[in-house]
Length: 317
Image 1 (cartoon, rainbow, N blue to C red):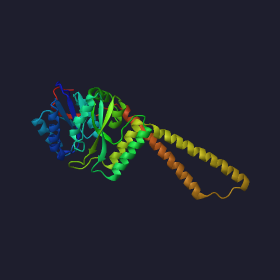
Image 2: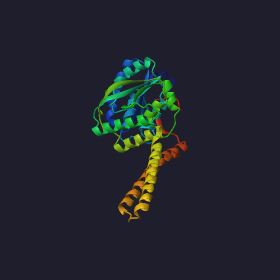
Image 3: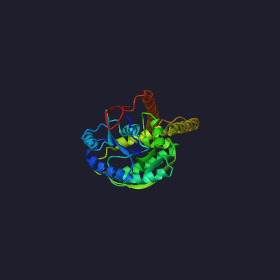
Image 4: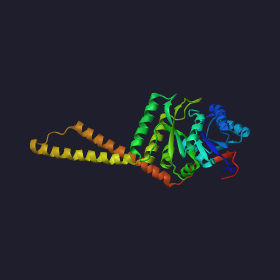
């Protein structure tokens, strides 16, 4: 659905079981947006929440129609929920933000200042991450370092989805309909003039993070395989290295046998070599399988999501 209203700024908020945060989120967003003195909409995307997130959002929509609702048919994941919100956003500028208030809405003022300077994308870089474990911070830093080295796309480290995008940038993102979506990579892939602003990221206001280490691992794998084929190249180089060394070892064993005879072969060393080469082969097949699986999924051309119900939009899509 699209609105006929001339809207300056759209806020997109993906939500999954965020009932505890909705009240304070509404208060802080309305305060920030009221001070802008510009037309706005807040698009809340309910991504299959199992608590009363949707019910609370319906009450807010009835109280303030500028808070609009997209209720997805099931839990599609944050990347898809964010994409749905961008599809429905009609503002001249669009700001995705998490519902847990780790990203301060008050930073929107500074983002708009940068946008007024001519930037199409203004992304927020975390200089400090409160409420997160040392392990999570370290693995996140490692991931951004790795993907920065292997990807031809500039993906800034310590950034999330919190950023301001111009209408031109959002329309470009909407053209990218791939099923496997690593949004931070897509934001970098579209290009345009981009600028960074720094901030300290707060701990969650309430509730628990939905990102366990398994989901974070899958997201990292998504980012690497979506924006780099370097793992395939590494597999090829490593396979060549192993084969070359095996060839040299074969020459060595042939010469040794000719000079000193054929001693009883060592069973332990043989097993080590067999298991090592078998492990290399399975690892390489796994990497190839990840890429083939993504090709298979993309070839189906399924819709990214289905909407069960929407509220606050003027006309049907």
